[in-house]
Amino acid sequence: MRNITGAIRTIKENNILGGACGVLCPTSQLCEKECSATGISRPIEIGKIQRFLVEYGWQNGFKVFEKPEVTKEKVAVVGSGPAGLSCAAELAKGGYPVTVFAERSEPGGMIRFGVPAYRFDKQFLDNELADLHDLGVEIRCSEKIEGSEGARKLLADGYAAVFLSPGVWGTPRVIPGADNVKGVITYPEFLVSLREQRFEEFAKQVTGKTVAVIGGGSVAMDCIESASKLGAKDVYLIYRRSFAQMPAEEDERLEALQLGVHFLILNQPVGYLTDSSGRVKGIKLVRTQLGDADDSGRRKPVEIKGSEWVLEIDFVIEAIGQVPDKDVDWSAAVKLDKKGLIVADPETGITSNKRIFAGGDIVRGP
Image (cartoon, rainbow, N blue to C red; front, side):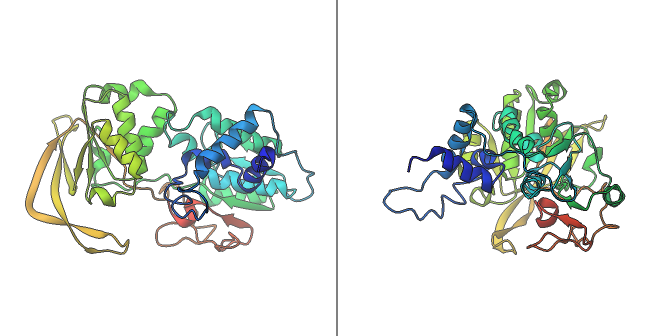
C-alpha cells in the first residue's frame, strides 16, 4: 500500500511517458469513466495519482532505468512523438542501440509543439526524456527523413530496421482556397509558433481583434484559450454540430465559456470574405440542424436553406483535424491506404516492407 518507488517503477516500466499521460490524457473519459474500484464513492483519479508519483520520483532523484548492455543490431526511429519515443524505449530495454530522428529542433512531436505551455511545461517533458537518455537512446534533432528515399537510406546506412512514426502534421482546409487568404491559418501554424515563443508574430494580429476558431475538439479549445491570452477582443468558436457533440472534454468547453468565448454552434463555414489586400474580413456561414446519425454515430449536421449570414472577423484559426503531410511520400517504401496512412499489422507493426515498421497516428489516424 505504501510502496511509492514500486508504484513509480510500475508506471515508468509500462509507459516511458507515464508523467505526460498523467497530465494530458483525458482520464475522465477513459479509465476513470470505466473505473470499477469498490469501497469508494467515486472513480480513482488515476491521472493525478500517476502525475504525482512520477514527479515525486524526479524530486527525490529516483532512477528507474540504467543503460542496458547493447547486444543487438541498431534501429532507427523516425519521429520523436509519443509513438517514436515509446518504441525507442522498448527497443533500448531489449538491448538494441536506437537512434531517434526528430525533424524539429527539439524532441516530443505534438506533445511539445502542439500543446500550449500553460497546459504542459517543457521542463516536464525534458524530465521524461531523461529516462530515454538513461536507457542510451540517441535523439538527433533537426534531421528530417525525406519519405521513402530517406527510409531506404537509413537501411542502407546499416540500420537493421526502421520504425516510422512521423505523426500526421497535415491539416485539411475548411474551405478550398483558404491558403491564399491572409489572416486564415491552421492550428499547427498557430500553436507551434507559440511553442517556439514567436508571440509577437501573432500578437499584432490577435490583440484587440475579433478571432474565430473553427472546430470542436481539444485542439480548438487550446487555440481559443491561447487567443484569449494574447488579448483578443472577442473569440468565436464555430462548430457545425451541437454543444453536446463536441469532441472536446466537458471541462474544456466550460473553461472556454468562462473565458467569455462566444459559441456559434450549428453553423457551417462556407466561404471567406476578403478586403482589397486579400485579408479576411468575414466568414460566410450557413446555419445547420441535426439530421440522422452518420458513420460516427452522431446526428449529421444538415444545412438550412436560406440561412446564410456573415460574421465579421479579423483572424481565423482552422482546427478541424489532421491528415498525413502531403509533402512527405512514403508510398515507394511501404503500402499506404486511401487516406495516405501507412498500412501496418496491428499486432507487430510490420509494413509491406519486412524491415520497416510503423505506428502511432501515421497508422491509426489522428
